Picture 1 (cartoon, rainbow, N blue to C red):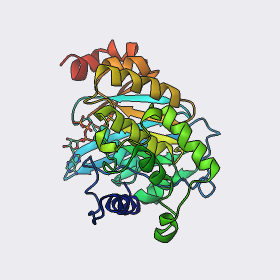
Picture 2: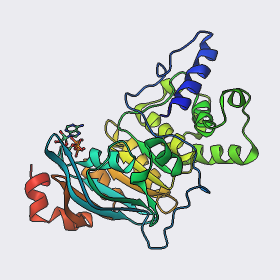
Picture 3: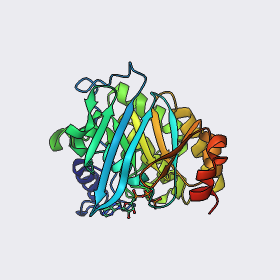
Length: 293
Ligand SMILES: Nc1ncnc2c1ncn2[C@@H]1O[C@H](COP(=O)(O)OP(=O)(O)OP(=O)(O)O)[C@@H](O)[C@H]1O
């Protein structure tokens, strides 16, 4: 979550309680998510070559340990790509590189065919339309579902403007559409803190969707969900596919089976195998390092 959104959320929560709340106090999760307004006109993403994301020959070492080792990968516009791999394979580090949190030692990372992501800071990358969801839900627990979604829209309006912020009709329509998409249409006025774990995850995805991201990176989205919540999350992701590009890191193979077209297996910082779930599941190397554990 960007600092301006955290501040605004804390201000709202304090107004509810009549007392000052420290920024972050209202968050339910530990790690920050990348919310920001999409500056579509400033950073048009050129997808004419059929790729929304393109990594080539990327290397990252931590104290001599090669966490990412000659990684090359690309994602098509509208694709829902699942990333699997054993612990320590480099999945989180790869997302850190795409979102500007970690700088690679070498290699190329492009958003579309023209935007060199290595030239931009983390906040700028979020503003270009790359949204990231960490594993733990990060919502403002003391605010309603509606207010959480509304906040996600208004982060760039400045303190004074945001205090008097009212949704215009287009924004109101978008909020209503997102509420339906994330299955929270009947929970608009509920405090986020009273939602189930799965509903909090959907709300946070909704907050990202309010920014209309082109690419969504989702880290273990169904961890800790009930079977029913997992099934609804699968439906949600399938409904987002096409409109957005999604990169989903998961260990839950039955969930992956429901949503996947193409699966990438990472191992020791590079791509070990890629293909349909059936193809990678029958790959001896994948069985040895991951599935056969
Ligand atoms: N900041 C860091 N400093 C040192 N080593 C790091 C750092 N970040 C990651 N690593 C190491 O890099 C490797 C890849 O880690 P990463 O978290 O990307 O793996 P992962 O595939 O996401 O694993 P998991 O499934 O457990 O989340 C691991 O061996 C990890 O210990």
